Length: 270
Image 1 (spheres, rainbow, N blue to C red):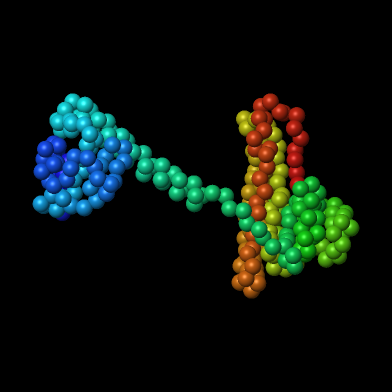
Image 2 (image 1 turned 120 degrees about the horizontal axis):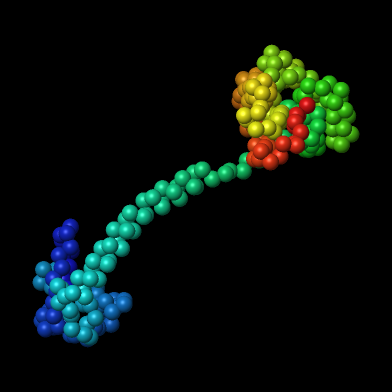
């Protein structure tokens, strides 16, 4: 087999052992041959046109190029190559997307920074506020019930030793009240939207007022908070050169089968 190195299109010529011997090399592959899987390759041009010689299975006769076995093998190789070409681009694209869209954990520094948490008078909100205060953050909590907010402040102060815990009584449905609370609290570095309510009931039996109530608190309340906090957060980030963060809490209640769990109570964050 001869391969033309000068042409962009490989030129292949089958040669027999007599022709091979006529090129000035013995049939027996010398030590300078590179051999792999029954393929012997001369490392230097030996043909008058400068082609290297590739001898397949030099110890056995070379099969004719148009033999049935060779044709079948070439067909299988061509099919495998075509399948590989079809599979590689989608697989590569999926791998690239998986790499780009992979979750990236981010560590937001809290010490010496201002953390504002809604629904902070009880439950998860109170636990987060306590943990942030322990890490050295100045914490502000917002809820509707002022008495429960004062109890939460006392608990945070007792557990963290900090006496700068801010409390703000407001309904997140009231955009003006939310904006006023954030002005009083001062620029925020980390905003945690932890408020939320849920009334488990089949939609066809649920009153539209209840649906609107949930949407106003869970969705619009979050928009009110972010819109009011964002300008000062951006300015604060430019000033401190530290990353700000907005966390929006979700609820596993969205996975509840209300058709089978009608006894679940309303779950407000006050």
